[in-house]
Length: 485
Image (tube, rainbow, N blue to C red; front, side, top):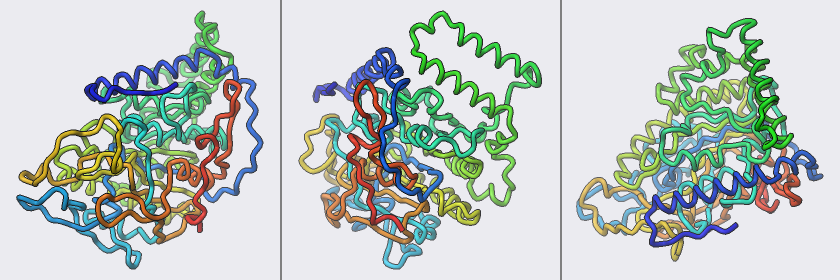
């Protein structure tokens, strides 16, 4: 199925059309036999690499984190009236880090201190995908596939949960922290990739949008304690098994749903659920994470990985025109985002290290693309949905910042999990266009690197509807071996 857009259509119409086609493709997949194929699927025989990590934490900067204003500083031009926009590359000066010669942007002093534990990729690249929509790029980043597909593509976390299984049978293998899937802009697009895909319900994420309330998610209602909780669970299973509409579900779907109920019941009945209660964290180790949802999410992620979660995604939350989605007031917004992420991320790395967990926990900081003041996509891009407004001179502070979606070069930071320490890989140009000019890393190769660290071959696949479907697109992803220690 192809996806074409009318370049003259308003953005909200383009998004709506994309969502309609994506939803139709996913619904058709579930109704027309993917579960039947899965029921008889044979895991394709490939040699699995030796894992260097047991768990992965993805720190997701949803909305387009500007690399020149975070991890890849360029020539700095301070704010002044009349500044030509073409001269504006970074709006923050560079600061030193714990690695000699490595500099990142002002506003991230705590992260700067732990960069000697990091591998910094400065040459990640993304395609334009025919339309530079956040929804399309976030789907692509999280699944490895360009939407829509003829099958419901699993999230990376679902692949890890399905192929590796749980570290702790009580703790969900895949947990998503900080992203609301209801009541915010583009929620349906977010739901499209935040799933187990064709693997089924049991491998999808446990969604915890508010970390402070996570404990309530794993606590039975007070009215259903003891024997009543047990009897209600049995009654619920019976309702599902006797559902008159089950003829519209494959056996695989039915069994997957029931197994997900069993998993939930096991968690709600277990003392391991205390890991979800961040109020139990001693104050000296809880306070440095701060009171923001993101900071609390980082703390919760550490507690869950410590208790046996395989894959945890923590997000600053993607909401259109908020957070990293800096279409206006870019510099001021980035100042706020720096302060929100700096200490929690640094604290997470230090805590994992203090607990002896960093070597076997891969922490990845990533976003769907970078940003530029002038260029949309890459130089010469014909992708639709590009910004058309143009400001040549800075006359107001709202103009000062990087506002346009840029796919030609961005940064990804990786800690632990077998990666090198204090290492920089790749480079972008020093002057516009800031494209990757050394060792470009595609999303397929980045995914291959993450999966290889987790002990999963990039060629791992399942037979879906009579054809193989791989963890990296067409099984072509190649791990970047230079990143491994």
